[in-house]
Length: 148
Image (cartoon, rainbow, N blue to C red; front, side, top):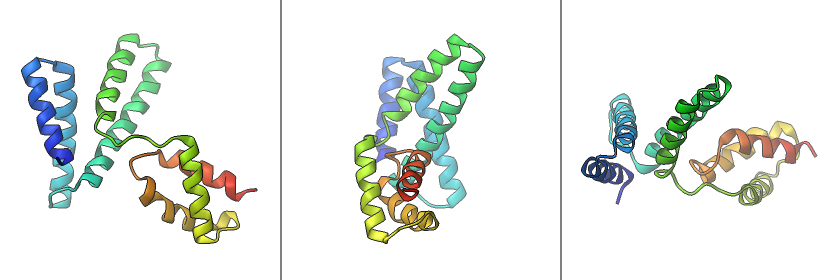
């Protein structure tokens, strides 16, 4: 089952169960996917849909930080629930150890020795972890490894 079909199925079940929060979050995700399809003028594959949903999660996390700074308890709770729903459509996130293993493999694969090789390492690494880890975190790990 494709991710788009899964979104449609989950939306139908949320409609049946009258789960308004889940329904609104799934509708938001489907709208973002549809907008991306219109922008690219083609049907999206699962990896692109994962990127779209990851973008929504990233925006939600930024909003969560702002809500926490403003001490908006009711908005914090709602945002956390929305993020949980969105994350359920993403692939399982990689552990820190697994990311470090992939970083080591990419460094060996590209024969990277210095910080100037960061781009080569990231180019090799990102397709392997796309959607399963935050790019900023991975970039920081690669920088730490290359600066030694």
